[in-house]
Length: 447
Image (tube, rainbow, N blue to C red):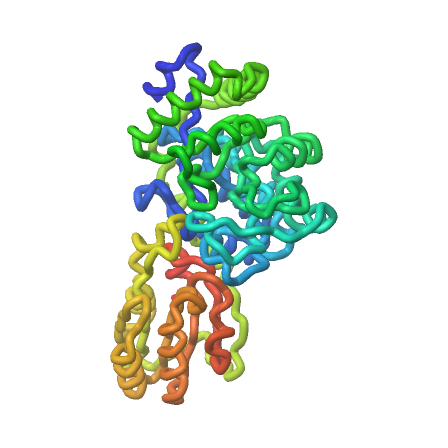
């Protein structure tokens, strides 16, 4: 708050964070670990999503954060899109729109700017923009029917900012090698003229490999500003920032970024900061409060999906001496937009709260054959098995381990703790749950 009060007119500064919940939580364990967008989409209760956004907004504002790079408005139609994962609400554009609008309302009621992300949407590609550029091969009619639906809803809900995505849109730009971020047809004509957005636009990180990195990123930064973007999300390298600042200053002097363009951005930024001034700074007691922890647990329970239970195995009701084997892989970050490595995934401890005779077997993220054999041997001695998996399409060793456990004939519950697609890699599982999140509330809900 003191930092914000140093600004001219005491207009709050724009300080942003990747606080999406679920697999991407930029502010760490000292904040409430809410299940992410896909869990909220599975619960499909917009009032619950709005309450979550309101709680997230209060915690962010209490910590001095005024911008949240959420909601994610991408439509998850490509299971191979690892960088998206559980960050999307789902695959139905209309449902995503309802939840994106609800999260937007909640965040902004808490005095934090919501940022629908990643315009015009990159859920249909299987490439990670941190490493390469991919293309969405849809015409404008196709975009209107799918990709743009959630953004329209979030904008109609009052979102103050929109983040661009580094994805090519050749039907709009005529160029498969041009990221949307640096295209005026996308960032001005599509976003502002067609969707009617009059707030602040910001790029996704400009140091991603999907954006050309020639001449220290200066050229693409200039082109992005000329395309109509108001803010550039840059590298944390301060020396590189200074080079970019010098390059942009010189570009302005030479007229490469027109003065009218700069003034338009200044007006939008000033309007947004004046809006932020209307909100008080909440007490720190809001952060990780009991009320918020209970809300996270409620969301996690509502999200749980029982996909199948052919043998009527659930709920497990083991006798006093019956041993339950709980197998969990080590979480790891599958993409830079991922904070999962910080999560302990203590499922065995959570199950132990309900039953004493629990065997805790933890395996690497990519189990080796020795890990698979060990799991099979222990499963043969157990009365029931609960085995968690985390994105088996990119960690196939986990699927091999599940298959080995299923072959023992021991009653087994499989749980896709992250993306819901894992069952396709071990289709013989007769009892299967989806949790969509590995935050503590979701782990507790599974138990």
